[in-house]
Length: 360
Ligand SMILES: Cc1ncc(COP(=O)(O)O)c(C=O)c1O
Image (cartoon, rainbow, N blue to C red; front, top):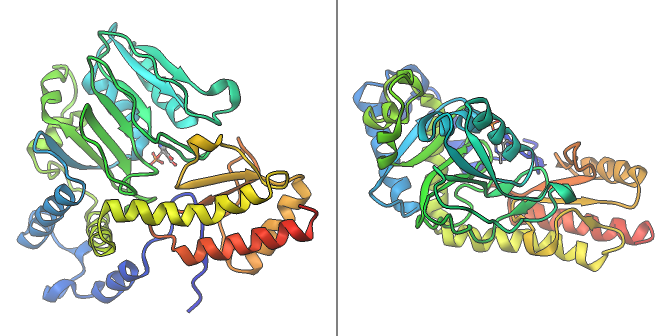
């Protein structure tokens, strides 16, 4: 078997024990004689699994009772539209913090629906290399932020105070990588494919009070309440992805939970950031230091030739998925939950060696 060190930005590495369980249970899920993909989502087995996953997620992430956990599809991209459709309306105002491409896509959807997207802070002037100060105003339907900026490698260390409204947080690239403070939170959403499983499932954790805001004309399948009131079984949910998500939850529980996951992620990222700090003229980090993401580490080398050379050498050593996003260039190491400390160490050894050999 040839497993590589996988630094892909998403879909991304899954924990090996999760993949092994999927393999072992593929033909016969717990004595049912069929795979999880082949059974009814309304049968006892699947409904039991869903209920168990719900309870375990609520415990793991300390989700207060006022929230429903919804299993949806369409990715975070669909949430960009779901949020304004359900929680605001034409002519109203909602706050948005612009920390990059994904925030901009969310803003675009609100504007399409005729909502005034109030600019509560932006890092656009410096190609999103920092986390801006957030300035809100009274009367907003919500305040939307992107907690981790996958492309640029910046991350909110502390969530802003939303004032008299609540926070809506796109946690696509740091969901379950650290504890979540639910105070002032209205809705958290995330595609599972980075820290929490396979692509095809989106988690939305929503304050039930929001259901009352849904406009009368909103079609049933686009209402959050439809998912909430039907335990995400209004239509056929992505059953296989829910199963994989459950396996990832068990794996995180075994690692010691979210606080432990956060410590581990800090240690992992530190292997790489410390080499960047050792060779600051050679490795130019995209993010300012106080906004550095623990999930996506972005940096440039002195020339594109050196970047190509580095990527080639990395691949020879089984370090894959390190090419940066085109809007930042350079390199990006995505070190989500399932990327082990060993992978980060191996990368840091190569970085140190490469800098020394190339005049760093
Ligand atoms: C922060 C963030 N938000 C949203 C998205 C879009 O997610 P999806 O492709 O699941 O719609 C991504 C994808 O990488 C992301 O990183």
